[in-house]
Amino acid sequence: MVEAAQSGDQAAFAQLYEKYREKIYRLSWRHTGDKEKALDLCQESFIKAFLALPRFRFNSTFYTWLFRIAYNTCMDAHRLEAAVASAEISVEQLDEAAWGQVYVGREPHPSSRAEERELREKVQEALLRLPEYQRSVFVLHALEELEYKEIARVLNCSLGTVMSRLYYARRRLRSLLEGYLATTQP
Image (cartoon, rainbow, N blue to C red; front, side, top):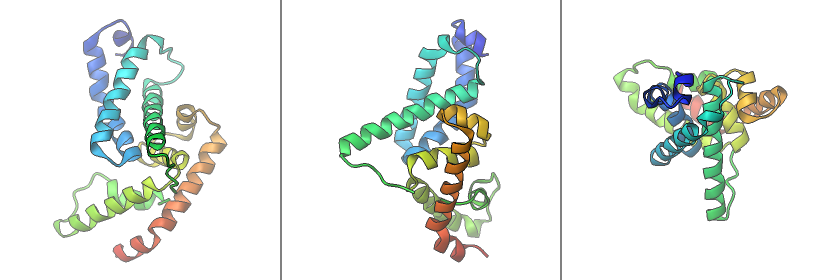
């Protein structure tokens, strides 16, 4: 599909878009916490990918390459927002098990939907309080299920840096949600 899209096959690119659209949207949403901004960033990421597609050399998977574009798009938007606001967001963790309780694709019992929605909101708030470098690693690993090596390629950093950032992200999320998770779990 990628080779066909590189050759100018718009239908092939449309298939790539459909295949990865939801993942890129989720990545964007988790970086912004705003659905409208996330939609814009998702669209912008695919436009950039379409324009850069002739330069894709298969040195990584298409998925990793596309995630790198989306990540950079989110970072550019974040920097622009910070410049406009003249303030840098100082943000800081949750372990994967607790996050998984919220996002695993299971149908919640009707009586727990409100609690789960509230927990999702608290988790998203905590996630947005992480420093961007920790949030990115956490999102890519725990939520997008990328392996450490793929994350290192996407973020252009070492494997050790990925592991360190993930450790501190989990630790900080646990701290931010400690009181809340203790009261909501059976």
